[in-house]
Length: 134
Image 1 (cartoon, rainbow, N blue to C red):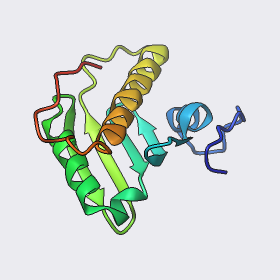
Image 2 (tube, rainbow, N blue to C red):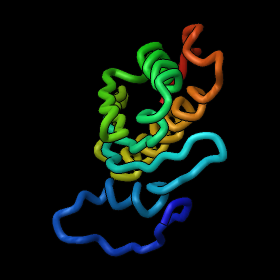
Image 3 (cartoon, one colour):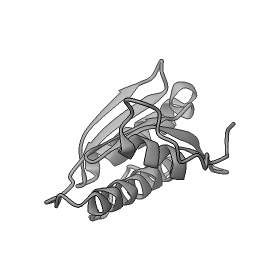
């Protein structure tokens, strides 16, 4: 169901607790601007489904420009046919604390989803994105 957040705390066998945490907390979101869902969230890597990249070449170009200019993003892979964006990002020095890793993943998701939303603006990607930190 689009636009809702699952509250189930159970973990299916074989699934990463990071993926479950992301699914339970923020996996399905819909903005008035750009709809997306998070399909994978791990420390250092997040995958999104963004249907708009399949329909809007200008949006796709702006998103690519923002991702390439962002100092936190290390790589991005966009599959237009699947409307997916896989982003790897700098995690800094992670401690072994699960809580710390979870905070990094949540901060990364907030930052990367702001790029997805920013690409909706006509002027996005024209100038370099300001330096940001996770």
